Length: 258
Image 1 (cartoon, rainbow, N blue to C red):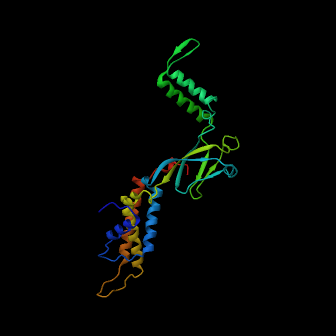
Image 2 (image 1 turned 120 degrees about the vertical axis):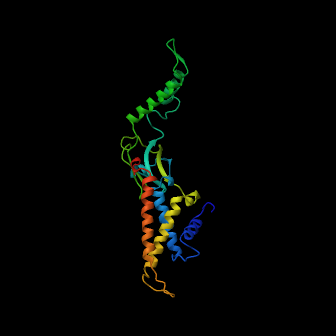
Image 3 (image 1 turned 180 degrees about the vertical axis):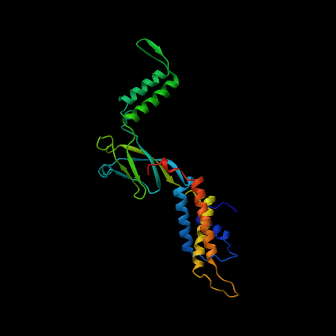
């Protein structure tokens, strides 16, 4: 079939896999919507294809300093680190500041210059090495601000750099974070193989739970309802899918702050 590009197309696909329209799948529409939401939540929280690394930039306000926290958008799952984009040892200061003068000197040394009548050349290698050295000094002296991210509060707590004045009102900070892919904007999420298999298994589980309420009931023609079989099959499929996803496609948690 064609690519699945919407939530409803995903639902229709899953129901066809379960037997519709040949077999009636006894699951309410609201129950199906709940299962799609559950599948999306598992996909977004654990599947590596559901997140991507980006940088969220914000300006520090007095409220941030008073609360020692920064509120973040709710689509951020993990925070790796926070960096100052101004106020560091080797950033900012204008053209008369130390950073500009040192970098200007690097350019002179990198492409050749004169000092005290002596001629020297450094080349691009010198500039790259000196830039790395400056960044290392900045990291050793200033480091990254200490932060803790609370996913359920959507809040980044600041544990340093306030009392020592390194974070002040008006400073810009860049937060390296991992955000979820919005399925409404990037509809290829609905066509992901894990999403299709997992959503089908969740709907099948709900179908089995519904039918198990009528266990042993005999229908006209002598047919006996046995929802327990459907339920057990679905639980086995869900367990297998979750284990395979976490072994093969989950992002390692130790890379993140919270």
